Amino acid sequence: TNIAAGGLNNSSEGSVLGIGVDQELISAVPSHNPAFVSRNFTDAEVAYCCTQPSPPSSFAARWAGKEAVFKSLGVKSKGAAASLRDIEILNDPDTGAPFVTLHGDAKIKAKEKSVKKVLISLSHSETVAIAFAQAF
Amino acid sequence: TNIAAGGLNNSSEGSVLGIGVDQELISAVPSHNPAFVSRNFTDAEVAYCCTQPSPPSSFAARWAGKEAVFKSLGVKSKGAAASLRDIEILNDPDTGAPFVTLHGDAKIKAKEKSVKKVLISLSHSETVAIAFAQAF
Amino acid sequence: TNIAAGGLNNSSEGSVLGIGVDQELISAVPSHNPAFVSRNFTDAEVAYCCTQPSPPSSFAARWAGKEAVFKSLGVKSKGAAASLRDIEILNDPDTGAPFVTLHGDAKIKAKEKSVKKVLISLSHSETVAIAFAQAF
Image 1 (cartoon, rainbow over the protein chains, first blue to last red):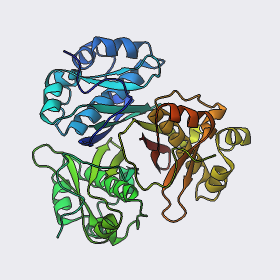
Image 2 (cartoon, chains in turn red, brown, yellow):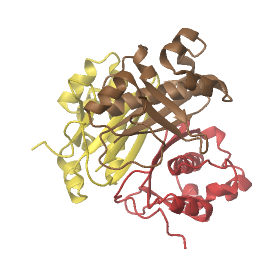
Image 3 (cartoon, each protein chain N blue to C red):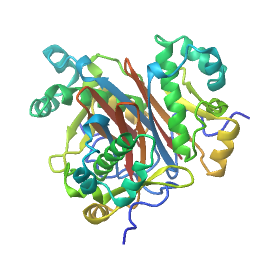
């Protein structure tokens, strides 16, 4: 039941339904706070971020990604509320490319808007994470 | 006569004609200067930005958005000239999502290039505003 | 033989195959190092960057652009390796808009993935360069 606007980052047909950009200061994302992390990230996301060279950067990039996906869906984010967990961003094991899977409310919203797929790209410097999303 | 590449941020068919990204230091956008503001922003944009939690951030994000739209149209911006006012970025009252309406020269340029719609997304941190635009 | 996913930044039909975003601290791109420059930039790119108001900013923006193109192709960048030179970003003399031409391995990878075109947009502030790419 977790299949949705995700899938591998390999193609997207049809019209663009929305785009979203977001940036976050890495120091502003409290990834050292277990309650924050479990409320906003799936187990698979946590497992991935914790094995990266800089877990705080990875959490922040993913956080920016979730906000960008929200914007691409044309719905307001609930900020730090549980629903950011509904937007899961994992990485293709072969290419390293991130891809989006929607759950729960985000999945329902996407269906209402006929969104079939969301593409995502992430980047971080030492201090800032940015993300771009596109919904089809 | 103000209808153009705008409309609600809800769909876009056909081929992508151009993309544009821009970033601005919020402190570099002189939104405290009334002459600058009236030359570059429409009355509706000013009304919106002045009701936001941080008007300087909102003006800067919108400024970055206008530059990104220019890039997506494949035409050079005239910098601080009047024509940035021709690219109006307002927000959907229901979703908060920004959308683009073109006027004047920008509208003419878009028509020449067969641009039917421009999607926009904005983001700002404490110090920097970024924007992404896509022309169809 | 240098024609590929490039061409003028004027249209792109068909489905979006991938998107890529990247940012670089301008001070972190060693554009004062001739070996670094010749390994990663084509002669035409060097000629362009050196005539810009701030060559380090132009090199950094182009570097971010190359990384963004790599991400849009869904392949891993080889970092500072020679292959970044295979992604050439030049500017349309009339509009100033950047466009992508792929060579060598990047061209082969793009063909394997049925990529026909890559659109690019670049931006830099005093300190940071960002880029967005989209592969069709």
